[in-house]
Length: 196
Length: 347
Image (cartoon, rainbow over all chains, first blue to last red; front, side):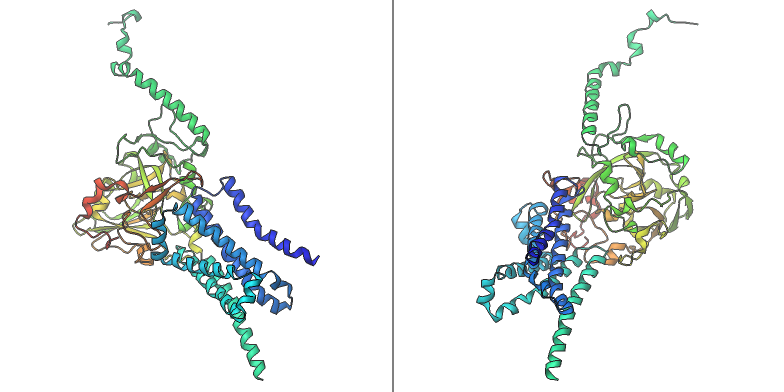
């Protein structure tokens, strides 16, 4: 039974991709499909980042190790959706005009911020196998704290592209603040209790 | 009394000579109409004027809107068709009616592109009145019927370029804003025109959104010479049909050489003033949205590069990614308005 959880989580995490592919094949993305596809994949990337960030607090709250067992996989799904998002942007929105891509990365602040978040996720993805954890030792944990930075950058990236309705970005921003805040509070409590 | 017997009537008297001479063209036109019908059935969203109709484009019969009030029908019974040449016409393929009416930015009805068509069923375009204020000899509150009465409607096919880097080609029905302005007799102090959109939280659910950071009413403005340019249109219809609420019913502005947000919808107030009016987007983010907002591929918006545009509709595998032209391709008509101005500074 326990063994079934992992493949199940994997399959559920693929559902958004399947739904998007169905929409692509049915040409059901509206008159501006490139824009819509970029929006959907970007949103799922942030959502998986939030899910991965929520696992540690959930384990602490419910004292259930099961939560963190899938942390790496869900983090990699955030990277996966971010990669699709990035490729959609390069292919369908900029048509592989390398000069324009280069300019966008440097001159459009919200893109610089989003790309920085993506680069962090790439580095964390590369260093996610067990062998890298062993090789990096203590530094692995330090390096992987960069996910906090990536999640903040991702929310700024989203907030910056919205024209006026900031509801969604405020929700995600609030969740990031909550998840990071919980960690800070937990750490503070531990150091206090150790002193006592 | 001379009564001609049928045998006395020459065929040249029955068929006007010009039509007789043009019979070949007539046949070609007929063939085109047939082809058009074929295209229309292949793409159900596509709309074409029917055979015998002088207008270049009509809403698909099943989607036609009923008149907001009886007098509208009279108004729309006689519309001058679009000419065959630029600038009041473009041969580029039209964006289908369904996309023109279901992919909109009209934040009073919601923030998503589909919200305006989905959330505007309560909107009432009749009765409607427009307040004329400021530096004019004839200010006052006018019924829309009186506003429109002296103006003959015409069809114009314009490109519409959104600041978000997508564009459409739309057959509007309207009349020159210049003709309307002249009737109110602006004084020498009228250097700018300011427009306001209706604010009615009852019928415009987007206004209540707590996350919309717009302060209503939506405002836009033009310099007087921009307003008087023959391209500037007051639109009351689209695709030969009454404007749906999501497209700015009952009356909206169309300024085809500027980004779409300048073309303010559902106008309830027109004010003439000496100083440049505050405008909604410029107030929100002055570094991003200028007062002029002329389409310009060389001046990028902080979020969207403007050298190319996605012509809608597209599918992922048949994309129309085209080069954006200075003043949206209307430079011949409007470039002189901005002579000597630094367009990167006055964006």
